[in-house]
Length: 291
Image 1 (cartoon, helix red, strand yellow):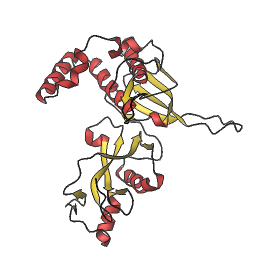
Image 2 (image 1 turned 30 degrees about the vertical axis):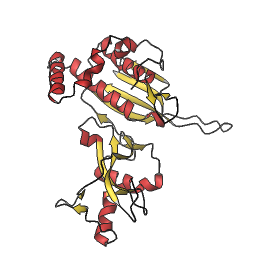
Image 3 (image 1 turned 90 degrees about the horizontal axis):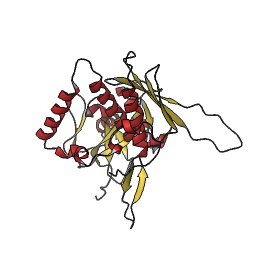
């Protein structure tokens, strides 16, 4: 893709949140991406409006609609992400200076906060807090870690099956490996999640995932918890029958011509595919699944 002269804003910039809502709430548009030879890489929508109104930016491909929103008439077929927002706080921000205005805009629209905030799911509530770090001044500064919790809303539920599903889902995630092709003769096999411990507090009905470094606060753990939340809601909803949901899901997949989504279900049976069978396995143990 050839670089254009000047400032050339030709695609949308997203921030990925861990919302349990729809795709627009998970992948929030916050600005435009610069493919030009001048200026910054990322611009918030507010910055773009200011540049247009001041006459600094003149581009027929960019318009402000009747709602006062910045829109592109056409854009590249790419997906651009600035950073992740986990429970209201930015995580893994690569360029702090370039991201200041994006973070300001995120605060303005209510997806970024000064402190972690709870995220409400269908069946439970996800929360994050920073782990207490004990400083030893004779050693290097320790790396910051976090604890992720997922608490059931229904405290009356008493089912070991739910505990097995929760712990097993995280252990299976930590044991999964993906093949990464970087152009070398041999591909790399890498993990997608790591934590120091995971357990379930039966009294509080709470899944606890401790010792998570910032590098592992990615879409993989977010996706796992979102799926876990929906699975538990289906299985333990007294007003619904889970088999009806499953039948409806399979029919929806067929109607969308996306049968490949169920490839894992038609493979030879394997314990690696069941969360419940991972509950008693060692945390971080690998399995043969590859993406």
